Image 1: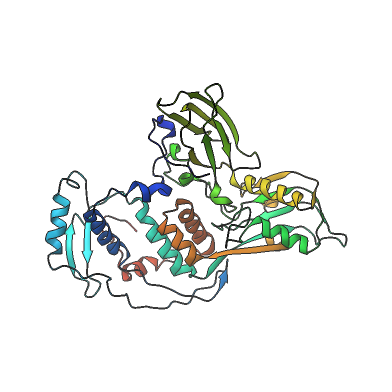
Image 2 (image 1 turned 90 degrees about the vertical axis):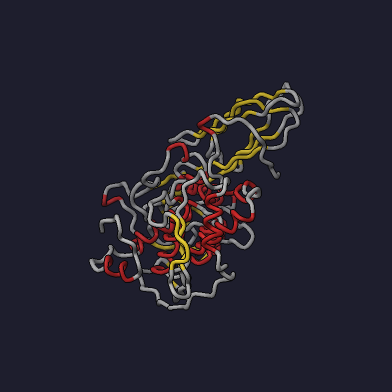
Length: 423
């Protein structure tokens, strides 16, 4: 069902801020002048980026081959009066009350064409994704792919029995999904098919979702607590599934004696819903609140919903996504005829050294790879997906060795601006 956004009153805890999925519609009011200014700022941010190609790799530490490429010509002609035009735009009533930092540099000769507070510090926000994705392309290569594996301690027995636990091991794939979605077959469904093709019929143990490939907290430093329940604040797990988010939908009831219907696309019951919405007569104001617990997946929906109102939907982040992935995998195994004696569990890096999972000492029963890093970068930047950017950053930290002493000098050679920064 397609839901449309409605004007409504939100409580402070439930206002869906920075909803990038609705940005295109929300930005339709922008004038041509705003788009022109934004395009010029984007050109500034990306002027130094060039495509890098490398040989195929999958979670490999090999150094990608660097291919230098000449920057393309600008797709538009720069007006000779550009500085005057931009200055007028920034001083107009539409932009005058904002704080702007703009620098426009020629790609041909490197000359400064226009500057307005270009040396001032600003909160970077999603512009930082450009740097993260550029570094990922440079160090890992556009053809890098993430590998998601299924392990057991021993080889399956002749009758298809796996003695012990079945481990679903993630390495940070951003595009892993539960079931095939169009061209995306990087799914748990494909892993189940691969296990069945090997003749596996019985798991005499638990299904463990292992996210220990990444160390540290699932929440980044400086994240706001009231963003964590929304999809754009999803936890960055090495075992990410369905972008670590699920949808909650509200539809109108038939009469005022019945509450509206609240549903979710989490078919495994991982999220627990509480419906405290009352139905009110047509024409009354729609008021809804949606809140997921900070440390659980209990979702409460409350407020009043006018009879016959159009559907409402919200996308919420999942707490403990590795356990969610294991829960889904456990269900898929059983529904596809594989007997599982145990339950779904999860494991991270915060265990005793002797208890940490080591892929090299276990048997890989199946694996899948998803989209290339180049394709992931395109989605990250075009749709401004916070989770993808965070997973890229953590993949870089896991795949690459610690920074070398000469890194500072390399940065200077690449044009890093060190003013006001201690390296």
